[in-house]
Image (cartoon, rainbow, N blue to C red):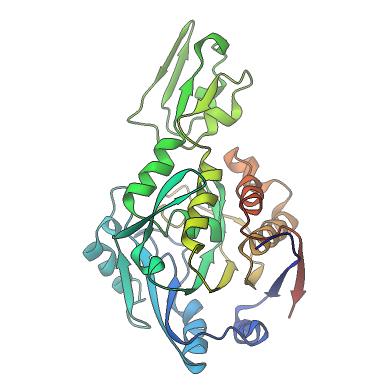
Length: 330
């Protein structure tokens, strides 16, 4: 990890996924955890079992024993419990192609001033494949490999920390009650009238849009910017790793994340292909660049009013990899 030139491989069609894997040539032996989001019930865009099955086949043929894993979620969902998520994994067809582990236990580590509970599956292994579906996200603007690990590789307690830490605190003397914070809040958690600023903590989920868009600097984070905290959490997940392969699927690039079952979710960018790299920062920067090339510069920022590049820049700053990369199309 450092200021090097990352190598990122690209295939445009999923039928060439095997060629991509042969080029990257990951060699895993023993048990191989494969991190993947197995889809919220009602979501139409998450990765399907047949789209990742060639990866599992390749690992097996080269001496590894893969298993799929994810963690329980914080919000109200069948995926908030181990048994509920196992049922979702079965219903979505993942249990038919591979063993599945749903994790709710964690191992605490201190990283960049934050106490992160890394899920036991990650903490007890030194190798991993991270399969990420790249799409928009209401809080991070874009969700890829950093989001997949930073939120998906930790316990409920850490998920709560990341969200609550990004909730706003107001510096009253700087506030001019312009109301921009209320305008950008996706949950209507802020109400601004003449000389009165009201924040509903129950509605707020800590997206940070109010803080980022306040023209007076009157709002700050309770603990940490969400995008920076995501990168720190991802770093915690990678501390003991000897070998990690990242696969970013730029297919069905939707407005909202795979946790969303909202009918407002929709495709906002055409299919691009699948990327592979051993550098999380390089693959994230390449993914974002390709999406901007296809869907227009600043696509996610226009949709979500959050600059997704910030998480990638911060990941580089804390030593996770390089934003400078060489893209090799196969």
